[in-house]
Length: 320
Image (cartoon, rainbow, N blue to C red):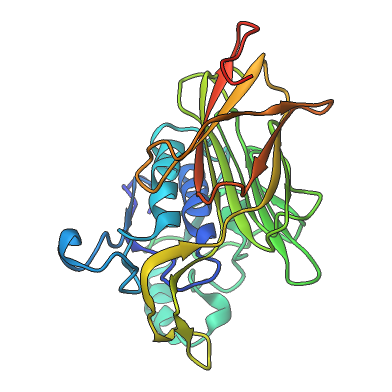
């Protein structure tokens, strides 16, 4: 509603959704673009964490999900710090009181979900901010079509691309927060500072500055590289909508494998520290390799979902 706060009181990409790694980065980016006021991810756990088996035990439990738990702080940076610009233009919808009453008849028309407004392009929120201006005002106006591919936000920072073979990719490219989410093997998988070459069919890779400076100038960056997550031995049901057997601990991940190249970086060296599930150093740090394109970072040699990158600016590097 125009002029009113807007929060999402409960949201999740429930386990064992095989594409769940898309949820947090995409929602964080578009929520910031739409200038929402709050997002509440449901839920940490349904019982005391110290008392439960270290595996994902419910559809909505986050505590033992190594993908979502590393993505939450990264998504929070984009949303709370204003790393993704708010929309430049707002499209308003107005309804008469009669339209509001008659809208109850539209509930079974899934092609109208979630706006229940005939003629309103469902992709409009990917391009502009959207608001309801009145529930007792002029009748709903007509709206311009949104059919381009990719659908690019009016700020130019977010693009949603759909392929002809049921593939897709969301790219967010802002100075402090950049992400590639989806079928990242496509040639479209790049941002101003990020080039990705991975073997995973589907993944979500996010690079964010941990400082006020943009990625190209910051001394510390956080990189998350996430794909599927599962309990060991879990068994899908026949419809692949849930699990017949929830498996056992510990929860495991599909590592993102391949390489990432940082480009347009004002760096003399880049140190890469893999992190464990608690965000602590996991194994030895190593140096990114300088090549003609930029700084090459191999992915997948250490089984992890995130890395701390330290940028050397003075011509020396302790990682060489």
